[in-house]
Amino acid sequence: MGSKLIGCGSAVPKFVISNDDMAEIVETSDEWISVRTGIHKRRVLTGEESVKGLAIEAGKKALEMAHVEPDEVDLVILCTSTPDDLFGTGAQVHTALGCKNAWAFDATAACSGFLVGLITATRFIKGGGYKNVLVIGADSLSRYVDWTDRGTCILFGDGAGAVLVQATAAEEDGFLGFDFHSDGQGYRHLNAKTSVGGTEEVIPSTNGSINFLPKKPAFSFIQMNGKEVFRFAVSSVPRSIVASLEEAGLTNSDIDWLLLHQANWRIIDAVATRLQIPSEKIISNLANYGNTSAASIPLALDEAVRGGKVKGGDIIAASGFGAGLTWGSAIMRW
Ligand code: ACO
Image (cartoon, rainbow, N blue to C red; front, side):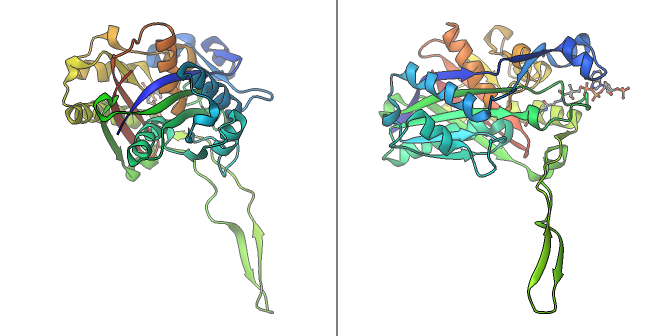
């Protein structure tokens, strides 16, 4: 049993923050941000908007393109590190979409999350019993950035992207190679920690019962050592793409499109150079949305497909990398 991509969709919040707007919030400039990152603007959730809302809109568009009815979906995977609810948002997305014959769960692997969702979808299909799996990447890192830290707040934006993965005959398999890694030691370079320990204070009482003062749950802002993350990305991602190409039995020259997690143009450019992939084969919409974490790959894919860039049969090398640390690649045919 194989699987293939048959539809995609995306959604972004309405509110746009340009680099000039950023310069009103922190000490920075359009020039610094553009030159160091390639980002010109980003979108962030406001008012009633939510990760769930974006995920629903993106998922709906992917189903429409795939000509698959919601009740034909067997599984919904919401790839997110920023659910609206700590216990997960996937089930709410699944129900709002009307996927009444499916079940749903959240998958968390920061900016590699969408790739994790993709490989999970293909494994469920290969295992049998699953025909249509909706994989949605949706994140709102704007909720967790320190808007006084110019080293991080300029980088991130919110958004969602989705694909429909459908079962197909083994000889038509559209997923040709995968490669995945994680390194918990690198956690110190990029994290958003939760409060440690469940209680502020535990006081054993004389009658044997335990009294405790609960802590208010809290996350710290995103902490990042940008230089280390940069170094990690430009060394790990090319190796990962080469490994997934080897599994696919392909080489660099077979790649029609390089689709990396949209974190920083200099990272994308360095990876393309190492792999000797010409710039016209790079898919990037980083300039308009910044780093949208698990949403960035499907959001860029959707724009490239709907814009007529990516055509049926094209080979895409996709790679996600980020907090965890986690990184991975997929070679897939559109
Ligand atoms: N505007 C102006 N100056 C700034 C800004 C800013 N927004 N941010 C930092 N600076 C200053 C610093 O204070 C420093 O000044 P100093 O020399 O006086 O001390 C100077 O610019 C250089 O700072 P660096 O941090 O060394 O700048 P660098 O060239 O490394 O660029 C950047 C920083 C853009 C963050 C880069 O390191 C990067 O993109 N790293 C990768 C980050 C990334 O992609 N993270 C996401 C991973 S995905 C995920 O899972 C979330």
